[in-house]
Length: 214
Image 1 (cartoon, rainbow, N blue to C red):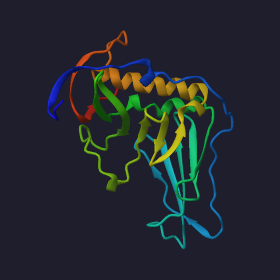
Image 2 (cartoon, one colour; image 1 turned 60 degrees about the horizontal axis):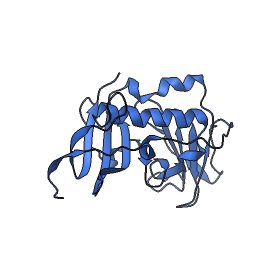
Image 3 (cartoon, rainbow, N blue to C red; image 1 turned 135 degrees about the vertical axis):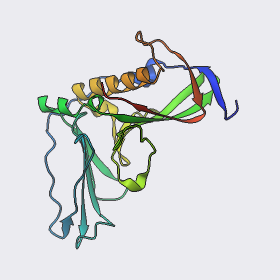
Image 4 (tube, rainbow, N blue to C red; image 1 turned 30 degrees about the horizontal axis):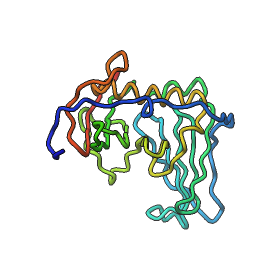
């Protein structure tokens, strides 16, 4: 299969969108304070206030933080990394106020990593973030934009490389994640209203589209 745009029937099985029930952790996310030897850096927040990143660094050297914490206030989880490559993540039950952080209420961008297989197109990763300006969906990591990354191959949801296995989300978090994925696929034309696979044209490698607020 070449690298050009191909008209391919998208194989969207339940494996990509189903989020299975698992353990439930009821502890809410709370603000973490760093050790006395570290100073807090400015908190980074997504445009919809859903995602937070807190960092700490020695002597306020925020270009080289040694402690990072991320929070998803809609799905209900947080990750704390104090040693590189060893984040500690936990889920919690998002409260009623978390409904305000539904990204469907905002203009957002979707970026899909796709690969070709004998069965058609396989989506390996989905990234969703809020566009600072309408229809400006060019991803630039230098802008420090927070995004939600869904790693289908490893069944993880991530923020800035700090990942939680999806089975550890609360029941509410799992339901919201499934709805987020299905809604994005449907609005991109990858699913019909009846969740049936749709014929779409994809560029092998990446598919990026803006999605207007609901």
